[in-house]
Length: 99
Image 1 (cartoon, one colour):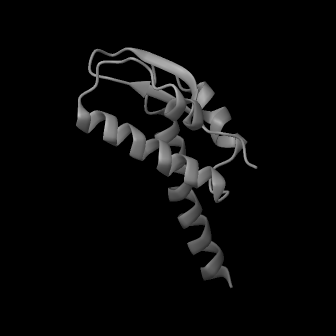
Image 2 (spheres, rainbow, N blue to C red; image 1 turned 90 degrees about the vertical axis):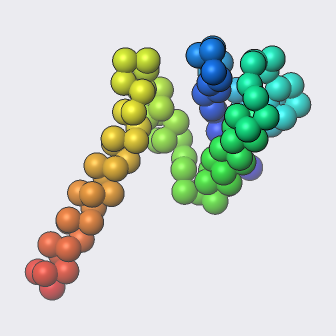
């Protein structure tokens, strides 16, 4: 069974809880001030992310990248993943031209 993804919960008042697994969130949801829409979006995010780990699309390397992300660079993982896909596409196009 793949490891449970670790998530970062945020709410309107900017409280943060790190290191919460999806299964523990469902069993003991944190007592944060969230409206119903925020709660539903958070649960959808958890379900989606859990499915990406289960399918093998995300792994331990993604978790390591997230550890590098801090309050000073909240979009770090997004930037790295975007850069990876952009560069990969360019490299594949170059390889195709050479063949």
